[in-house]
Image (cartoon, rainbow, N blue to C red):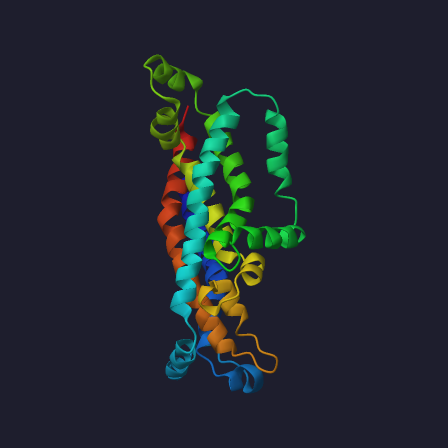
Amino acid sequence: MTKKRLTLKPLRYLLIGVLLVCAGFPVYWMAATALSANSELYGSGQSFFPQLKHFPALLRDLGEVPIGLWLFNTLLVAAGGTVLSLVLGSLAGYALSRFRFHGKGLVGFFLFVTQVVPEALILVPLYAMFITFGLLNSLAGLVLANVGFSLPVACFVLKGAMDAVPYEIEESAIIDNCPRFSILTMIILPLIMPSIAAAAVVAFFAGWNEFLFASTFLMDRDKWTASVGLASFVGQYETPMSAVMGSALVFSIPAIVFFLLIQRKIVAGLTAGAVKG
């Protein structure tokens, strides 16, 4: 047994190392590309190692665009969509999980249908609707458009988690005259925190990476999100790849930090589920 463990231990470290290299190499190559001159990228060939001598030129290129403002807009859209999806998704998920009403199956079916409809198909009707309600060229409108796609996912994830919560726990609270809203917020939601974290990750990254709605509904440059700002680097005759990769690195940092903060909840939930009898 001990000999087997000694044999498997190096293989385990080797596998972890291979996974780290596969996951980290794209980020490293982005940094190496950002710190390379365009003449190297399109001519003599890119160096495998980052060239720190190009760092001032990279800062100068990035200083010509409002990266901080685009990042802030993206954060508002992603965070707003996440909060709205979780609030509405928990209410809808609780209703679908605990109540019986006519058309319940139909509601679930239509929520599922929203996931198979391409975004491009509803772009024109949504554009006309936003003009009517004055939501065109506003971040609030973009949040609502993104919630339309992330809300059904959050609803199904939270409903599945609520189905697994024993009804006897809720029944005891009902006997003590605890209101339904308090049962949901104080009893049910704390028990399904890992599922809430998973739904939050889906909703946040859907809003963070969204491009089609943002490039269509946002006209003013100071209201662009990061995805639209990155696309604006692509020119007809020249594309500054070093600036593109530098911006991409900056835009990736908040998303990575968010995932690192929330992944503990997801892992803790998986571990708790593994030891439950």
